Length: 297
Image 1 (tube, rainbow, N blue to C red):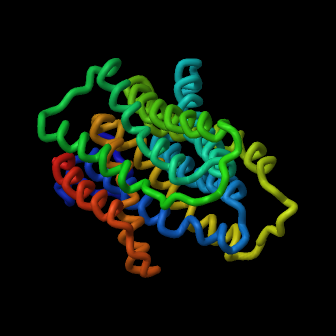
Image 2 (tube, rainbow, N blue to C red):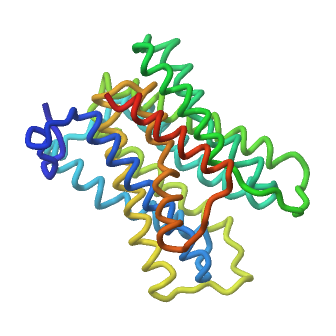
């Protein structure tokens, strides 16, 4: 069983899917706590996407080294890998635009429920199933995800309905991405999947640059792109370990757990910034802890 060489699973006495799932959740949770800092420093989120795409490269090099640079170049692998990559990276770009035109307190709850799509597709087409304990955990996780995405209503006027269509597009894209990632793991190497994720992410960099408003001054200092690179590397590593998590674990369990990364984000925000969450989010935190307990075995 091939695993990342810097993880000693035998010593940890933990199942591979558990290790990779929790690693993804941890890295994404820490990433979420710091990702707004470069933007507040004057480095746009769209350019942050470009930085993220390039942080995928060293992770891809590690993955390719593990398989001795033997990427699957056949058509089915390229199609599956590209679907995974474009649906994930394209979803990020759609989310940027949705948040420009629409209210975050509606956009985030819609997008956050993408695990519903993954669970439905995995049950219907991959025939995944599990025990009652896990189904209860999945249900609680979905409710917790919705509560954790709560954002106070703002008075910023929404422009048209394009933002709603984009939010639904992200919801579908990210749900499909995780499903295809799991399905592709049955026919191709996880490392190859990540290689195509990296490649498609880079291909969309010009789109992200085109979306950037350069009429506003951009901070090109270390606390702009430099800090963004350090933070976005957490996202990239989490994406790599997610591919491994879905190699070894069921999508209907892995995806709801990783979608609870905001639990870590909220806790870190409380400790570092002193930001106390709203009662709705506290309820989400409690449900999330219970959901993780039910799902993690």
